[in-house]
Image 1: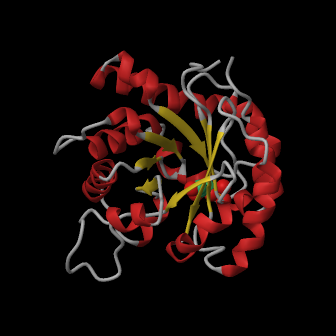
Image 2: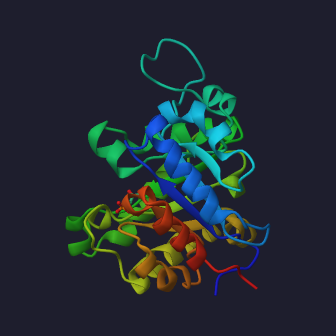
Amino acid sequence: MANPARRPLIAGNWKMNLGGRQGLDHRRRLADEIAAQADNQPQLVVLAPFTALPLLPEALAGTPVEYGAQDISAHDSGAFTGDISGPMLTGFGCRYVLAGHSERREHHGETDEVVHDKVAAALRHRLTPILCVGEPLTVRTAGQHLRHTLDQAERALTGPPVDDLTALVIAYEPVWAIGTGHVATPDDAQEVCGAIRGHLADRYGPAAAEQIRLLYGGSVKASSSAAILRQPDIDGALVGGASLDPGELAAIWRSAQPRT
Ligand code: 13P
């Protein structure tokens, strides 16, 4: 059983889907499913494409569903063609942003240093960064998954001061589990999340480590979520494909029982 002080968080990463008006129906259906969310219930966040952000305040008004973006520029303004800054995201009411998703690391060459700067930019603008870490299959097969994942976390959080780490969320997303249908076992997910929390405790002290929420992501579905979410160091899930189905996302959210 995880620390009840950490409110469970279910985040749906829509990736490059539901970017415009065609997603409005999804949001209405999700809002209907979640209508009764109370303070002590799990938090539900959707991470939408930039083009959907202007539509979200109206689509989610009066619902408890929160929202954020999938990427942030490390810079606040200037000659960075195609990038979106922290102030632009907060201007659309975003409260969350992903940093270092493996698809950005792979397809956009984002290094740990870039990821570090994005986490820092999010914190600077009072956005909650969801830092993604996780190993590819070759690293797991070689038994190096803990070292690899802790190194990613360490490099993303060092360098220039990261001012308020307790606002941080870290998502363990093993690359081999993303979009493959091969969800990690609850024990495997707990092993890594437990190691991350232990590392945070060594680095920043037990009190800070106890406050930081850790998520698991990678082929999470309603049929697998409850067992993963029961693990002591797992405080929620980062859901890709299954989040495109409002009923499935709501079922995952319901499986994240409030901690008593
Ligand atoms: P899937 O749930 O589709 O495996 O995606 C996970 C993910 O990448 C969430 O960020």
